[in-house]
Amino acid sequence: MKMLKITESKENKKFDYDNRIKRLTDLTNETVLITKNENIFYLTGFRGTAGWLLVHNSKRYLLVDSRYFEQAIKVTHKTSVVLVANNYENALVDLLKSIKVKKITIAKNGLYLSDYENIVSAMINSSIKISVNKANIDNIRIAKEKEEIKILKDNLNMAERAMTKTLAFVKEDMSERELAAELEYQMRKEGGDKTAFDTILLFGERTSLPHGMPSDRKLKLGDNILMDFGLSREGYKSDITRTFFFGKGNNFEEMSKIYNIVREAHKKGIEAIHSGISGKEADNEAREIIKSNGYGQYFGHSLGHGVGIEIHESPRLSPIVDNILEGGAIVTVEPGIYIPDLGGVRIENMVIVTKDGGVSMNDTPTDLIVL
Figure 1: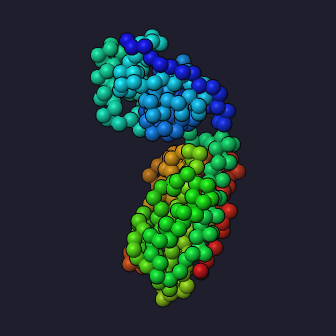
Figure 2: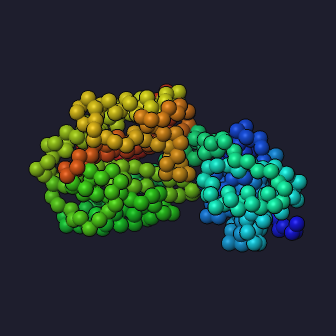
Figure 3: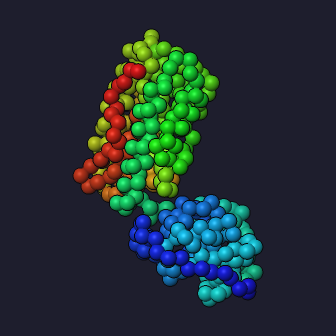
């Protein structure tokens, strides 16, 4: 067994990390290895792209290589930071031996098969028993703390301000790529570390692509403009979609009708949300509006999803998922109608789930706007 370099980090009081560890131990009281970056950040405050976290008797051991060792000591909360000198699996074995642990379980969330195979091999060679934890550790992140909600709302409102500023740059013959670049630039200027995901920004008939990527398609009078975007800051994401009209074209009558149906479904979806309802029920409330207006076949995706450290996380608002919404969760509500060769409309807000209903976090309206 090699001598490990272990340094104890101090307190990081930004979030309630001790309560987060308690929620983890309530879920599983085994010695658990976590390899998913988002869960490591949630439990320790460390935001590097490489690292493993071992939780044993409520104590945190964070394994990182030399790229992140100093950073991890400075940002984590009461964590034993272990320097990985060679490879992670050998350092893990040395750590387990030093704290006299002979059995561990690996969190399945975010576990790469190659990592699993390497860990299993190292454990077998060292006579340490290993299993895969069946619990969904991501679920401890569903209910958001007050500080998380504040960051998420700030991130959302920054993105909205960036959108408002970007609209001033909209002009005929600019490309989707150009407008997407302007939007992303404005999000950086507002304080975003980076985009939360690849920006979706489409014109005209291309707005029928729910996850289409910006192209060289140029803006023409009468086009609708679909923007789905968000920024990432302090480890948390934001997500918003708005659809605008660049003048009134030949399809405006039909597209404005579609817009108003989507807006009604969006409103109904938010009204339906409260703690205790299932994601399936919430989805159905909004979906029925679109179905009853004859456009059911053109709404193919789910109504929404959780958002926080990841852009898509639990819970889901979906016709195929029965998860129950709990208070404190933050979800998107984003119905849409997409008609090939004509265009599409999507409207998306971020919503806090409470016992009294869904509370929108957005500052911008959902009114039909002609630029």
